[in-house]
Image 1: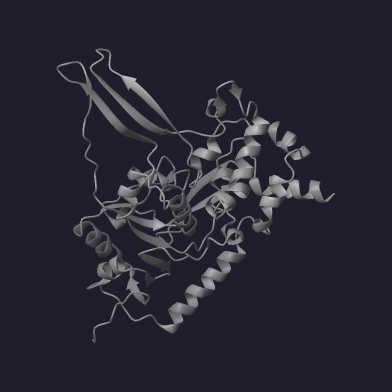
Image 2 (image 1 turned 120 degrees about the vertical axis):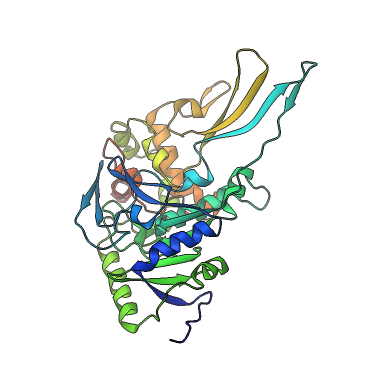
Length: 376
């Protein structure tokens, strides 16, 4: 058989029996392979030893405050959509040691030099909304005038193997946000999963190197049509929609005194769940601590939330002293002022804030209600 030429920008087909070899090759190239697996009845991303550990045969069901995995035994590896975890934990960890200090023999504080783990990550099974979220966080942490060193050290060498979302979750609205169910560019490899093969889009030189020597097949017209048909059906099965998101900055920022803010404040518990599961939220705080001997100290960065009352406490008082003001800040930033700040929406339509809100608050419903109030 003639050798199939694998180039950046080309498509090829990989029989499903080749998935294990792909995982092994990434590990052999020095990557720490991370992939979706089942833990505590949900999909989580953690180190992956074998393709056999992927959630093959599982689907997920999501609605307001509901997430459930269902095993049906189908032959697909990437049907189940992610749980509360997103991928931001790998580039923007929940807790990071920023600096460590120790006293020298004269009692003066000295900064201990830190060594960062530069092992490159290979993220497998990245859904389109989560890849879009990584690109939103790139705008936050990798600005022209400043780069977050922790984020930069992990992000620059990361390998991303994404998957088209062929079975969208019930709370997602990525089609409205232009972030799915088809993956946008920014991946190294992208998979479309059919019954017996993966159609693979090669997006980078790193992706081409991984596919070199793999047992690939020519992409037949039948497989390409089957993949497109499944993507079209996925768009129609999207759980929710958010019409005209580009109009939201004006809607939100020009109606800060709408009654809807009072209404949602009676239901929101300010628990921070929506911000902790959001793949783009980036509020953080720093804390200093010292040991009991007074000989060592450290500074750490940890995730915070704009729903935390202490987050908006400044000298002289709290600028957002109640749930109404904190919810309004979150929604107007996410869907409104984020455009002016970073040139994009802060929402990618993954639906996690709907699935994991214990009060069953749905951002698509809140924005619809606000629109209706303004237009009444």
